[in-house]
Figure 1 (cartoon, rainbow, N blue to C red):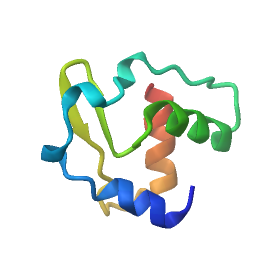
Figure 2 (figure 1 turned 120 degrees about the horizontal axis):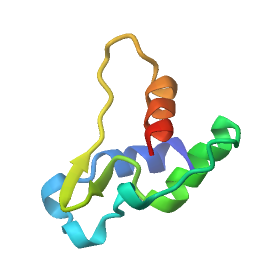
Figure 3 (figure 1 turned 45 degrees about the vertical axis):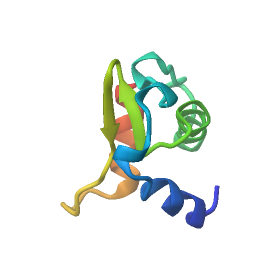
Length: 82
């Protein structure tokens, strides 16, 4: 996926998306034995938009704070929790 595509997904407005169209990440399973790059790709393939998902009946917009943790580390932590 290109950087431009990631940016397009990142700016999707929370209010413009119906709950039913989002992937419920509580049901997504990632093979934790795979290297990080493969886990990332598995998550993106299953979640669709990695920035806008749902957990049960709740819409979730994923954002990363500028707090010293790299996006790679934050995304890795997200994948390990799925």
